[in-house]
Image (cartoon, rainbow, N blue to C red; front, side, top):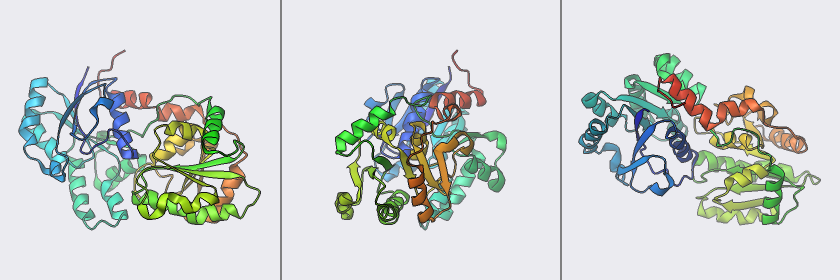
Length: 375
């Protein structure tokens, strides 16, 4: 069995954002197929990671990103444990991985969640050109790169000249490998919990709400899409918003409570809400990579209505009728499609789970990377 070292540069346990959840789930399933050691932040709750060895060597402050003292420490670990592969979550600490490779010969793989400079450029960060230079250089020096979307892989190959044989697609995954059969029970449970009729159409949105692309999408739902829905007096629905770190000035969305909006804050049982959802709203207009919330929603049986921008990265052909894509910024059509889709009953195709179930994803990736897998 391969012995893998992973550097996870920021806290991810417990997870609240899609990026944190991606790291947590990737490592959970990776540890089922290989012997994994993770170097991460001391602020993680390591009790949530029983499947692999955890070393809390990264400082909680920003200085962890340039802590040269880690070089000798990790080099000694690689040699003493005979570690064979080093995976960097994001390219941020690639400089560290390359210095360790120079001393030990360990293979370095970057697991990138987006083309990072593009994401920060879309958020208006002034330093994105510096990140672009560093990110491109890191890709060129790495032994392999794991991309979440085919679009990101295509960009790296076509625009930056990264050899295609170094590139592997690793989509964000889900924990189930077939369509859930308890959606009706979940919908009744959520309707009873919040005091509305289970015959109402449940629309939902979730995410880390202080992340600008998510916050902008939430404001579109509240102030553009919902007013259009309210004009249709016969349409009975509720919009459920899940997520933490809603800005204080939005006052827990109390002013929207009489407009069919329910704000739950962060919920531990997000799966119950996704199974209860009839239509997941994804009007996200910024950020990069795949929208993880959409992958989960379809997997748990919701129909997703998304803009072209929000649908970037997902394999549309395996989604069947569970993914409806509309032009960016056409909110009138977006709202009408919600109403038109509210009475449709379609099942997520089996092909979807063959692409997005974590177990299948990890075995495919490790085989492509020529890892020896247990039978």
